[in-house]
Amino acid sequence: MDTEQLMMKKSLYEGETWLGKPPEIEESRIEKTMEADVVVVGAGLAGVAAARAAAELGSTVLLLEKCEAPQARSGDFAVMDSRVADVWGRRDVDKVQIVNDLMRDMAYKVSQNILRRWAEEAGEAFDWYLEGYPDIPVLKTTAEVPPEGTKCWIQPRRCPAPESFENGTERFKCYQTTAWVRPTHIPVFQGNVQMLMQTGLAQCLFSAPVVKLLREKDGRVQGAVAQVGQDRYIKALARKGVVLSTGDYMSNAEMLRRFCPGMADTPQLWLGRDKNHSPSNTGDGHRMGMWIGAKLQDSPHAPCAHHMGSVFGASGFVLLNTRGLRFVNEDAPGQQIGSQIENLPDKTAWQFVDSNWPEQVRRVHPN
Ligand SMILES: Cc1cc2nc3c(=O)[nH]c(=O)nc-3n(C[C@H](O)[C@H](O)[C@H](O)COP(=O)(O)OP(=O)(O)OC[C@H]3O[C@@H](n4cnc5c(N)ncnc54)[C@H](O)[C@@H]3O)c2cc1C
Image (cartoon, rainbow, N blue to C red):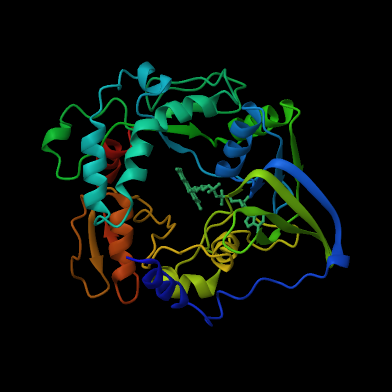
């Protein structure tokens, strides 16, 4: 595609209300200009990791975050080739096969290069991230109890696997590559923030949403403008570069309807909130990037959905729609089952279990 065609695609969205326009800010409203080698916009997992990596390489960093503190959630991590995989004796997974399977699952809509890089480097990155909590216990089975007093620990899922389990014969392959940081990885995350601050090269501004990026026409991105109070702003200039890590747009109803319509009516679970208690994931980075010339990936976008089946999760019990008909192979993984439920007109399904469920469910969730 040549540049002209690309520009035409970009202008596809022009005039749509979700895109908005960069705010006009009078110079008199800018109370100071700050400078760093690297300006990082958004202190989630990606932003904190980028900031720590840059600072450890000797760059000064200015981290700008919309909420009152850095934000993280959840607990499942891919650990191919990490030291955790060593503890579990699971180093020999076939990463090419994993990438191929995932590409097929995602209908080849994602970038294979990015996915491959994830498969190649996730283990090393996870080990690096664990430096934030170096003594974290790594348990050997799903049922093992963690040592008393530990803030968090790592547990394998479905380990040991049921005796009858043979991945080669599974219709939906299940690679034993997930580390479950329980009850949450927040202590590890906080350790990473501490490591960043200990470099002495970082400065963080909280409750400082970035409202626009600065770029000279066709030149490099020079920095950002962040709001630090009622009609008060700072300019953050970056000598080396700006990292845009503002997360997703699940709490922006207009963007959701435009690019992920299937998710528009789905209840959303979001924990990151700013000081006004508004959800922080409103697609600011997508819009700010586009205002200065970035191209948004064509829709449909991947939803950040977390509705893994029902109360029994994605366990292989019979699922019926509200007309009493089966609509999916219940052996499919949770995200895929969730997508199929999303496709139903009323987004509703019934899961049927019989009196033997306590025995059956144990085969899926050993603890
Ligand atoms: C309930 C739930 C459970 C999940 N569980 C898992 C899991 O087990 N494993 C897994 O791999 N993934 C999981 N995910 C997905 C995972 O949370 C995200 O992929 C990950 O957090 C993305 O990191 P990020 O740093 O890119 O974005 P985020 O974590 O969203 O961080 C973005 C940051 O940017 C800030 N920000 C936004 N706009 C601005 C602005 N204008 N100026 C300054 N700052 C701004 C936000 O406040 C936030 O701190 C889960 C998601 C949810 C919702």
